[in-house]
Amino acid sequence: MTRAATGLVLGMAILMLLCASGTAVVGSASTPTASPAPGTGVELRLACSPQALPNDGRSQAEITATLLDNGSPLAGVNVEADVMAGGGTLTGRTATTDRDGVAHFHYRAGMMPEAGRVDFRVPDRVVTGTLTIPIAAIAYLDIQLVSPEEYKAYLARQAAAAPIYKLSVDGFPEQLAADGASMSVLHAELTTADGRAVPGAPLTVKLVSGEGQIVQDAKATDKAGRLSFAFIAGRTPGTAIIQVMEPSTGLLASFDIVLVEAGPARLELYYRSPLTAALAREGAIMPADGMAELPVTAKVVDLLGLPVAGAELRVEMLDQVNGWVEVRDPVSDATGNVQITYHAGALQGRVRLRAYIASMPQSPLAGLLKPR
Image 1: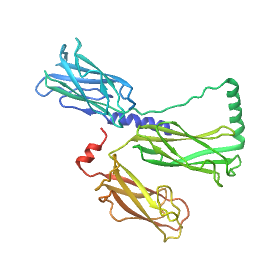
Image 2: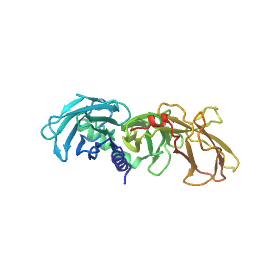
Image 3: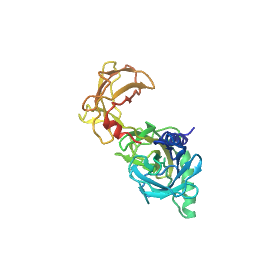
Image 4: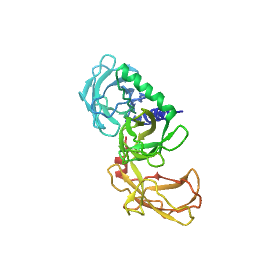
């Protein structure tokens, strides 16, 4: 399965998990169901089309609220609605059921990074319900239209590039929370057809799909033929596609990063650079002497950027075990920090540390910040 297909599957899974329930009625944008009010045969069925919307402030959906009494439609009854989350708007807060028992509402998406939630009530029948409208997973594709002559020249450059250069892009991690801060580090590598590095070659980097930001210092490959840059996630779930081009030939390579809905907090790893004494987030370099140590700080912050105390972390080595990791206390302190020390092994090569939030503290603030 390709990474793009994986992103689609993840997006569908997120839509299914975001179904919400109400009192005496259950409704969601993806699977409308119903439950009668206690002691009566009255039920309110909620549905939405489309089932999910981008949080762009302009996309619209039609919501239907169907009122039934023991399966028979109730006409001429007022249904009231209020937007409770997501920042969206309704064209009207009250609608009357027609002869089929259906009241129609028109919803416009907000721009907040959370699912929309609309509460419904039928005052005359003491029936309430909630409908959740998830943020749609989004992908973009830019298409450049050129003259037939320019297109032929483009095809010729692409064909000529094949025997001259090879271009590849790799990065980690391949999945990020859509929280506006999580970061992946990517590397583009340009070689000749026979595998020799191409130093000093300018490469262009562009985000062609999804939401996020490219952070790039160098514009050309280093002596190893590599160009490193970073991608910072946006706040909209979906698939981000980063494209790298060698401009003299038009040779292209791309890399996909899946953006999933952010949880109630985010986690960042820092270490202090021995050269500048500044905090760094990118890969560190250490001697493989079996003795060197690298102090690392894991910081847990909420969606407002405030430190979270009492979060429990798990820290581990991926790919291969080379050295060992020491965690003094896996629970974040009042500043949201967990102190980690990596003790170098004796084998040369890459070591990848992974930390993740295993559990969050049960607090009113954590509950308020959790996306609906």
